[in-house]
Length: 386
Ligand SMILES: Nc1ncnc2c1ncn2[C@@H]1O[C@H](COP(=O)(O)OP(=O)(O)OP(=O)(O)O)[C@@H](O)[C@H]1O
Image (tube, rainbow, N blue to C red; front, side, top):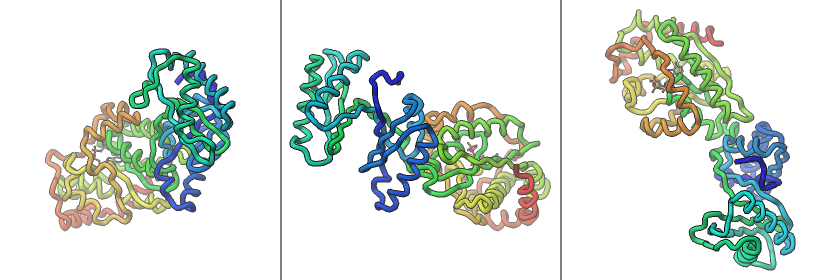
């Protein structure tokens, strides 16, 4: 989208699911959404009858950022006029001239006018659409095609106010960030966990990200990538910037390797992550933990291991990717912009045994947890959080 060449005076944004809530809940979500938009860019906002009317100071900034504000399903840069035949004729005429100037409509462009109406008027929506179509055709001899137009011109008549626009730009959808409380997200430097955190942000959850620095079993690139991923995810976090915690996890892993059966290293590692994340969740007043598990994707994510690693968890562990396959996850990762960072080779984790356990038995895992004295080791690791 180029500079505001069409002289748009406002942006009309729409929400989806929020509209299905009871009036009280809807009011709360609307206030949250309004506050998040105001944090993202300077503007005046009014919400009325399920529409958000935004008057931004900087149009281009607003159009870029609205694509990343959860809760918004679509938005349209628009002009505003009054609901009289004269005003609509005048302003739609000018709007059409601009569309012609910007080559968005020519004598070969098939067009349609769509009209929606709220309130009592002495015309029907269809009559107004017909009237508006004739105004467009006074400016340009373009063919009307209601079923397969190249361009749609929308008239939204709301009582005495009318809005005119020709684009509906998609927003990310979901619920306003912060409307659902906080989660602790386990974020590595891989593809999956940033996508999992993003999906929960999209459902309105604020995020505290925790990263496990496995040095000496992993190099510094892993933690660097993690920080880059957080920067990227923060492009979606208006109102609730992601809090981050990093924990030195090498000593815990060393203990697992030295004191427990080698095969169980990854299971004990993951179990420790959930334990530690629970401690962080308590401090952060979070209500759950989110990770990037997907059934069967790697050895540590078999159903047996999922059961064994979560059996002692104190908080619900949400895994929004659990039923997705790698291609589906990658697709989201590309869309949200984390893929190029996750793809960078970080050297991996050398603590992974040659033959990791894929069918961990709960009783054997519990024995191993005693052998490594997990409670004590996790307490020590908590002290190394920064
Ligand atoms: N170093 C780490 N720091 C924080 N969380 C981690 C770390 N390693 C793994 N996790 C969490 O555990 C989940 C499963 O990790 P695992 O290594 O088994 O799978 P993965 O498919 O490689 O995940 P990812 O693509 O997110 O790295 C990850 O999605 C992430 O939520």
